Image (cartoon, rainbow, N blue to C red; front, side, top):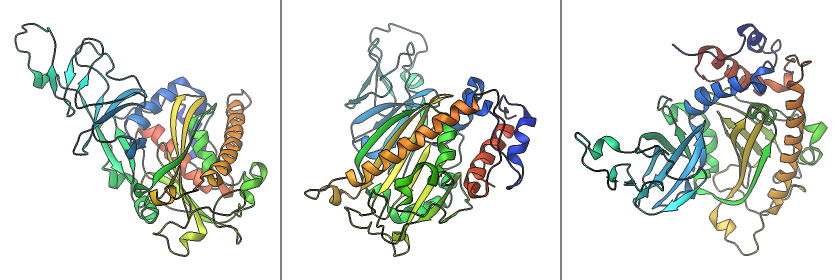
Amino acid sequence: MATIAPLDRLALESALEPFGRSTTLPGAAYTSPEVFAWEMEHFFQAGWVCVGRASDLHPGSRRAVPVGGEGILLTRDDSGMLRGFFNVCRHRGHELLPLGGSAEGRLVQCPYHGWTYQEDGRLKSAPRLGPRPGFTADDHGLVPVAVEEWRGWIFANVTGGAPSMPEYVGDLESLVRPHDPGGLVVGARMEYVASANWKLLVENYHECYHCTQIHPELCLVTPPTSGANYRPSGLWVGGVMDLMEHAQTMSLTGASQAPPLPGLDEGQRRHVYYLGLFPNLLLSLHPDYVLSHRLEPIAPDRTRVECELLWPPEVIGQAGFDPSYALEFWDITNKQDWHACESVQRGVSSRAYRPGPIARPEDAVYQFVTMVASAYLDGEVKPPR
């Protein structure tokens, strides 16, 4: 039987009302350590969580990454095969790599007592273990974790019970395919720690109701009331917005310093797509580059954000290419968003907070909120309403 979230069921009823009558989530959803722990288990361990770019893990290397409170060791052998394991030695439980650490080589050695493993997780040696009746190396390999690659990103599913990756992403695949992010490379990176719950960052991302209030630069290149949101078949939420007539892309002037991505038609070159794959990957598909925000919840009120900008390798390799036209725009916009989300975090932490009405321009927020609220009650995330 699924375990429901540690929230008052009645407090979630208003969030699940039909669109036009619904509200935001109760304050405890954004502030409670118990709810946060439940989400780490049911959203971040049970789902497909993005852990970074596939290109960051080259053949013969390994990395340790956090996923929902667990440490995961990613390895890629010389043939390019990706594998995932719990970052736990089978001897006394020492981490094989510190979280965030990386290493090279075909063998994985525990730094504590020197137990050594093959890239495929098999135990190779246990120094000076001594005679031990019934002990076999086959029984003491690293514990595997399900991992997949999709469109240039690596995903991990700690519990192993998530739907297949194609089922999980659903029709998001057809929207992302023309931009071909798997064929792009990182040209610039920004990292932040926002003092706000991860869901507040996602909610903020999925609406431009706030844009005229806090994003003057953005409103010069995209009409804040333009576009529409999708009705997804997978575990994602998102929509599309137009560019102003003079704008080629999202930059401070609207000008681009790169050619349009080759797989786009004329209509796609006049739009920016804002797509969020549950729970932690936000994709902004531009005519000339792809922007990603990867969220890593740290605490109920703290979220690490890795933001990367991707271009074709031949564009980045051109003499004089400068990614700052996009980097500067999005650094300004990101900081405006984090400032707003941090203010909301303080507000939802107040004893005066009550769930507020979701406005008409916030239909994608409604989709996300109902995904979360429904999962709180039945323990399973399903495509949005």
